[in-house]
Length: 201
Image (cartoon, rainbow, N blue to C red; front, side, top):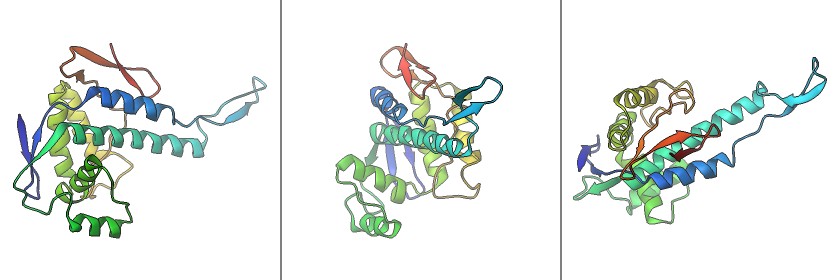
């Protein structure tokens, strides 16, 4: 298995993430996709969806960011394992509790949730760390090198995040930079449905 060393000295072992978890997460998120408000089309004399509504545009942009962030979270939780000994306080440490208190984030109750919070806020605090994790995970999933390069570049260039933000990975736009990985171990591919969901073909 592939290993990566983060800026904090933490070593992670990588494996193929759960594709079924990806699929289920996208199905659930698709149910929450904002719908455009209706507006009168003067030429046609009828109400039609107005996708140019600024409130809707902001809502759909946030929905897309939430989708991508949740998919990355699933990739991290199901595709990484921390290697002991740890050079920093671990997921159960009071250091994490103290930091989450400052950030006004409620500590997760589950072991996996706690691990994700620890990795994002203590073990992998920089955009470079997240890129170091996500890039090989995409390759393990069978993603093409071109799509891996686009996804990696989008961490740094997404218009929704400042270019000098060193605390989070830059999010990619799921419609502009679509990544279609193979379903690891299943011998199938993923296809988009147009509603934010990907399904095996």
